[in-house]
Image (cartoon, rainbow over all chains, first blue to last red; front, side, top):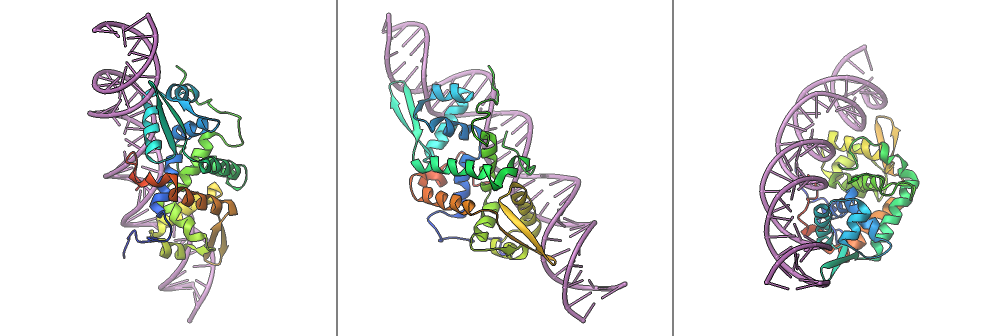
Length: 118
Length: 118
DNA sequence: TTGACATATCAGCCGCCAGTGATATTTCGC
DNA sequence: GCGAAATATCACTGGCGGCTGATATGTCAA
């Protein structure tokens, strides 16, 4: 019994659910494309749209989400808004993921339990 | 026009979609709970079930997925199967995520664009 | 002020994955 | 061999999240 959620309650600053949610922020191709586009430096929404091929409302929606989550930060400049990665460690995280993909996690794309997410 | 997927084709060993898929492997609370449970050391399926509270078929299914993706490795021992993290860098990735949650990404749980996933 | 541009917001639909329950397969103790 | 235990597999379903299309808000230029 007890299919509870009290697995790791006060172990670390972030619960398992929190960490899962953080990864979920990175788990979407659109959001990840935005983050990758921002790695070299800040971009406006229009530039992000141009760089990723996303539709404008879609990009804006994801940016809202990423901003709320603290992964990106936006600064209004006139009618433009420049977004940038909120922290250097996000870049590190992306780099580490790439490293893993080149190594042991090479079989990820072959996994058919889930897609990259429509 | 051109909602193509040729955004970043041959930039790095992993496509954006691949990296998204890798993160998606970590984005599920059940899978993440399994990985966290395995951080101290190898466990059998039964022990994982006991540690996470997941149902046996569910845990088995996630383990299959994690194994295919190269995140964990299983070694049969009699009728038991011992699973372990496939690489040290997975531990690093989890630690980095925790660090981010303690820092700028503190607002993740407040983000209402998506849940932790179930 | 007026129009054009840049961005944000909203409602709705569709596809998908996580969980369940039953069952199959393998391996141990006796 | 026999029954029990450990793990794997399968069909099914429900809820959720990402995309779109239209619209709202805000800001510059002339």
